[in-house]
Amino acid sequence: MEQTTFSGSFDHSLDGKGRVIIPSSFREALGEDFTITINPDKTAVAIYPKAVWDKQLERLSRIDPMDKLGAKYERYLMSVSFSGNSMDAQGRVLIPQKLRTKIGLTRDIVFVGVNRYIEIWDAEVYAKMEAQTEEDFDDLVDYVYQKYSN
Image 1 (cartoon, rainbow, N blue to C red):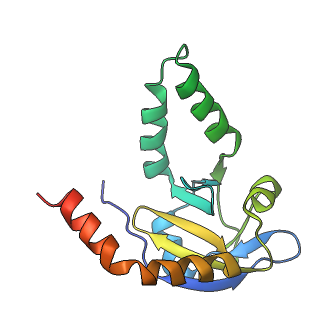
Image 2 (image 1 turned 60 degrees about the horizontal axis):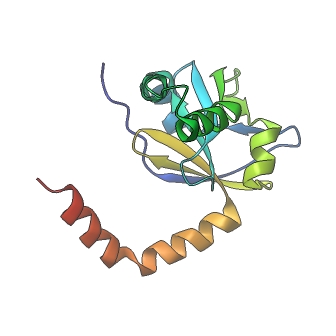
């Protein structure tokens, strides 16, 4: 199976019902069956294509139910994960109220492609994080190339 890649950032807005239009450049790669959940940092909503989410579920299936910490992680992640989503004819999707509240999404949001998945950030929070990342960018480049080079 071909690996899906998401990149770029797009300003959008939530409508009054909590729906958002998926950027057109993300729609085909996202597909018709995706999971909406929380990102690993608990700072944004994450949307995973089915194939990528299935790999996450495979990883979770290896957690021993007697592993209290592992089970706690699995329970929390699954409680904030909503599978089987699809876009309507206008390319909209409903962001579950539970996630909108946990993340603190307001009307103004930013879609961010994060290689294998998509994040949805509150626009104000994203602007602050992006500014900090730009300040730290040289150190981040050094870290990634040292840690992940062959």
